[in-house]
Amino acid sequence: MEFIEGPHHRVIGDTLDLVLAGEIARLIITVPPGYTKTEAAVVNFIAKGFHINPGARFIHSTFSDDLARENSDKVLQLIALDGYQSVRAVSVRVDSKAKDRWKTSEGGGVLAKAAGGPITGFRAGTMDRAIFTGALVIDDPLKPDDAFSPTKRKNVNQRATNTFRSRLAHEGVPIIVIMQRLHSDDFVGHLLTGGTGEKWHHLNLPVVINNAEEYPPEWTHGIPIAHGLPDGPLWEDKHNADEIEVLKADAYTFASQYMQRPVSAEGALFNMDGFKWWHELPPIEYYAIYADTAQKTGERNDYSVFQLWGKAETGIYLVDQIRDKWEAPQLEKMAITFWEKHKGKYIRGFNVEDKASGTGLIQSLRKKTIPVIGIPRDRDKYTRGLDAAPWVATGMVHLPADAEYTVALRAELQMFDGLGTGWDDQVDPLMDAISDMLAETNAQQGWILTR
Image 1 (cartoon, rainbow, N blue to C red):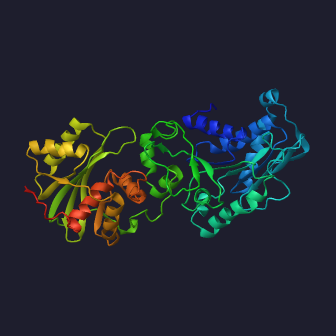
Image 2 (cartoon, rainbow, N blue to C red):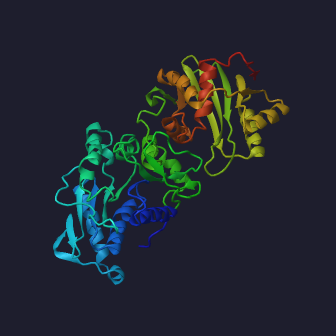
Image 3 (cartoon, helix red, strand yellow):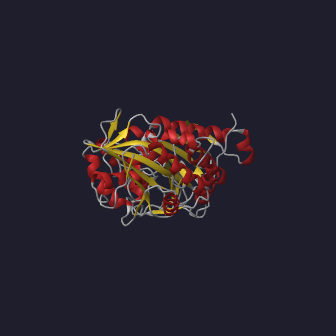
């Protein structure tokens, strides 16, 4: 079967070469599941290490003994290939070909064990500091099913400060950790927040690259590695933009395993259990439109969104929404179309965020006698989210259960932390609706009544 190369393979390979060259001693690579991380950072890396030095000594650890042995056996098979031997002859001792522990004739070898099991009688690397002598390679030390167990997370994390480091020949022997994120306090989270007191070079590869997103300040012990990849899907042959939208159906998994930014399973800022999902609308007292417009229309820039909300005795209801990336002329056309669709209802305002492209939209719509209310932005998203959260938690915000946009909306709400993680284009007008229709902070700005 032909190997389909993605742009991330080159980046991972170049970064691992820095480890082999002695330029990086502590490396974390975070990447989505199914992106061939084990082949790159375990099998091929160890095999290349033996090409450099047949006397290199490696410890490989993952979440199960069976998988560790399987990965170790793949290294053995790769070394045995004629093509490999023709470039570098590495001899494996015939008396030590157990899949979990084997040695080369030059004194090197591999020990492969589960992350939670004993690692004794073998050390990664040797005392020779002049050349590359091996590494400790940790691949997914925690399986996804164990991510929600504080005890299992703690057990794996503690091994970083005792068992793992004690199995190095000296402190300069490299440690490589490659995994998909599973929890904010998983092994990588433990290391990036100072669990071992060491600084870690960090190659972070989410399923969608966004170069405008800053490295999280809470990762105090991470040294970000520039990957140079363009905005958009990380590996389009694996997941294109449409397929990525489908992944968002499981918001927690998408945020953690695919975007490498774990959030609380209950929601980063909003209590997801507080949202109500409607199938039939109750009697609506009045409606209002809220819009959030994007500054740019590039691959990763936010969408522009128009939402129609209805106010009922039991709270507010999202009735309709359109969302896409529109340039200015088309943005105005879509705004007019959305207004024409709903202007027969009892509407108390067409509210548009008064900044960037929204300011231009406000001016153009007013020229067409559409009654627009500009929404000033004098508070940050986090503060607005905190104000909105109690209304969500008390069941006052109702969302459509079966709308076409429901999956993406649910994912965005669950990831929203007000600090710039992920997308927030649908959350912005939702928070405006809560502020205006429930908290009524803008109630006296001049309601527009139309029929």
